Image (cartoon, rainbow, N blue to C red; front, side, top):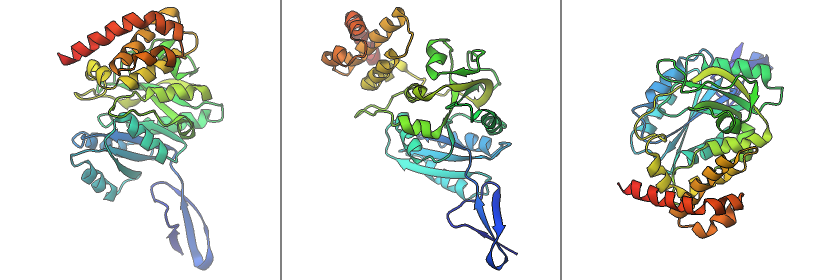
Amino acid sequence: MQIQFKEGESNYLGFSGALGEGGKVLIIMMKPLICVFTPTYNRANLLPELYKSLQDQTSFNFKWLVVDDGSEDNTAELVAKWQKEENKFQIDYIYKQNGGLHTGYNTAIENMDTELCMCIDSDDKLPPNAIEKIENIWNKIKDKGYIGIVGLDCDTKGKVIKDYLPDVTDIYAYEVKYKYHIQGDKKYIHKTDILKAVAPIPTFPGEKILNPFMLFLEADKYGKLYCVNEFFCIVEYREGGMTDSMISQYNNSPRGFAERRKKIMTIPGMGWAFLFKTNIHYVSSCYLAKRLKYAVKESPKKLWTFLAFPFGVLLGIYIKRANKK
């Protein structure tokens, strides 16, 4: 009996097949459940730790998609070397012109074909049983209308990043931040077709910072996430990451931040203090983008924007001066 692989299929997971003509077995490989995607820029020194954590998984029902955001180091050569090694999971690589993390999300989502997806940053790692946990949870709840799963990040010592999730079964992404006021990064695993439906994240010329959480807020209109206090990601914050230097980010990507504030304004059930604060930040971003004359016109909460206008201008002036310092 001779084994024959179907052309174009990869040999990373188990197989199904039947005895065919001439005693040959035609093997068709199963598509992995999860796409772990990693937008990266000049992080070749950190990627080996992530790669090692993927090799150490107890389940290999995933593929790894590396989106290289215009790196000038040896990222391409490094990933090419790994693609040639014997791995139990598929590694895909896409190079693109530098545009920022959110454009890396856009490229990844456009090229994904798995049922689920999650972003793992280049300086993060997976606990050894992360994929197995996600797989087991999803098999139990995938027919109950959920659009994905939200779980925890932990630090390198196994301690939760700031807050645990609330003791609820299902939750919207906006509720995590704006209803329960949960602090610290959390790990979001979404159905790929949901993110494809709400992508791409908007881009603005010359701006490279737009928080991908906007995408999750858009996805909320399709349903809730299954909420679980399980660790799916190990986080180590490093210099030069998105959490570094917020003043500089506000100043250098004002239209992106204005767009995010507009989206936040539409969250249902938010109190007046929250709306007022959000509009102050929105006006400050319009000031920094030199688009003050459009602030009220383009706002989904025009009265609140009008009331916050002078305070937002003052905040914008402060941000501009603080950034110079």
